[in-house]
Amino acid sequence: MADTGWVMEIVILAVVIALVAVGAISGLVVSGRKKKQLPPSAPSSTPTITAPPAEPHVGDEAAEPKEEPRRTIEEVELPKATAPVEEAEPEVVEELPKTEIEVPEPTAGRLVRLRARLARSQNSLGKGLLSLLSREHLDEDTWEEIEDTLLTADVGVQPTQELVERLRERVKVLGTRTPEELRTLLREELLALVGTDFDRQVKTEKEGDTPGIVMVVGVNGTGKTTTTGKLARVLVADGSTVVLGAADTFRAAAADQLQTWGERVGAYTVRGPEGGDPASVAFDAVKEGKEMGVDVVLIDTAGRLHTKTGLMDELGKVKRVVEKHAPLDEVLLVLDATTGQNGLVQARVFAEVVDITGIVLTKLDGTAKGGIVVAVQRELGVPVKLVGLGEGPDDLAPFEPEAFVDALIGD
Image (cartoon, rainbow, N blue to C red; front, top):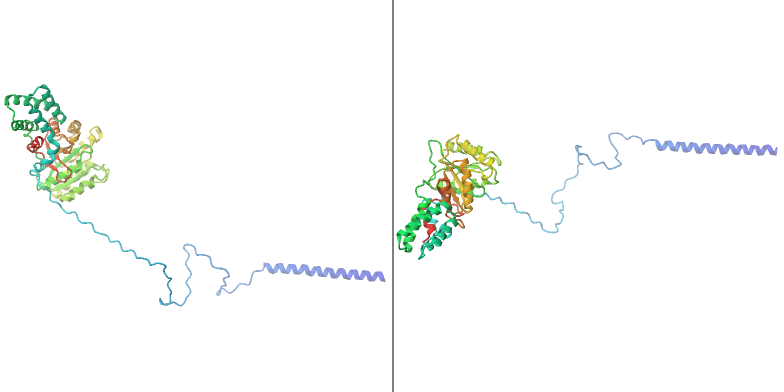
C-alpha cells in the first residue's frame, strides 16, 4: 500500500507540472498574437496624427492655415534695431545731353591761319637753303649740301636735281645776292616745284538728284576715318549737306568714330554690321544720299595694306559697286606725311587699283618733311588737295601752294 501511495503522488505531481507548462505556453501564444494586431481604425472624419507632417513637395498644395485671432499693428512688438539702418537714396539717372550741332570754321584762308604752326616744323628747309645760298662762295661742296638738304626733306631725287640746276643758273645771273633777293628767288623756284597749275578743288558737284560721291582710301594708321570726319566739316563749312558711309566694317568702333564726327555737324551716317560687306554699306550710303537729297556722300573705306592683294581687290569691288549709282567724283588717298618715301610706294599701288584723283597729307606738322608734297605729286601726277596740320577738328585745310611755300621759307 505504501508503494501504491508513492506512485499516486508521483502521477499527481506530473499532472500538475503538465498543466503549468500548458498554461505557460498558452500565455506566450496569446501575448504574441496581441502584439501583431493593429490598433482599431478611428473614424475618417477625425483623423488622429501622432507624428509631425512631412514637408510638402513641389507641386503639392499647401494646407489651409488655421483661423487665429488677428492682432493689430499696435499689439505687435517690433524687434529693436541694434543700429540705425540708413535707407539707400534712389539712383538718379541723368539724361545724356543731346549732341549740339557745331558750326565749323570757314575754310577760306584756313591754311594761312595755320601758317605759324606749319612754319614751326617746316621752315628748317627754307632756312637751311637760304643759309647755304647766302655764302660768299658757292662752290661744289655748297651745292652738294643744298642737294642733301632737299633730299632730306623728301623732295625726291629728280625734283631736287631740277631745282638745283635752276638755282645755279639764276644765282649766276643774279650776281649780287642780298637776303631779300635770295628769299624771292627761292620762293619762286619752290613755288614752281610745288606747282600752281593744279586744280586743287575737291570736286563734289551734285548732278540732278545724284549727290557728289567721294571715296576715301589709304593704309591703316594714316588717320583715314578722322580725315573723313574732318572733310565732312570742311564741306559743311562751305555750305554742303553730307551723308557719311561707314564702309570700314573691319576695324572695331570705326563706324562709331565716324558717326560721332557726323553728329557734330548734323551729317547722317549709314553703317552696317561689324565684319559685314563694305561694298554693301557703300552702296546703301549712296542710295540714302540720293533719297535724302544731300549734296555729298563721303565713303570711308577700311584701311588696306598695299602688300595685300586680296584686300586691294576688295577695294576695287567697293568702287565698282558704288559706280552702279553714279561715277565717283573724287577718290582721295590719305597719306601719312611722316612716312616719307614709303608713302610713295603705297600711293603707287593704290593708284593701280583705283583712279586716285587727289592726295590728303596728314601729320604734316611736327616732324614731317614738306618735300613729300612735291614727291607725291610727281609720283602720281595728281595734286595734293588737303593737308592735316594738327589734332583739332578744323585742322584739315585746303592746300594752298603760296601759303605752304611761305611757311617753308619762314619770315
